[in-house]
Length: 92
Image (cartoon, helix red, strand yellow):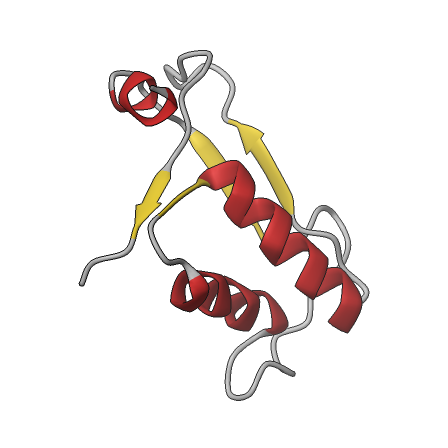
């Protein structure tokens, strides 16, 4: 099972609001565009979402609403294991 395999891996990744370009600090209903997209993705999650799925959702919304491109990548030399990823689990 995909999720079970991921639970045994160390994950060292970063999801950032942009690359080297300036990022927007507002425009997301009291939050930044990035924070709003992240919170919306968390709220819409009905079960388990991995970090890559989160990134895809956040990136799409941010790019539609701001001139910035979120980034998601493994952190070099930090102990990331191939195949690992964050898991966002909805609590009831």
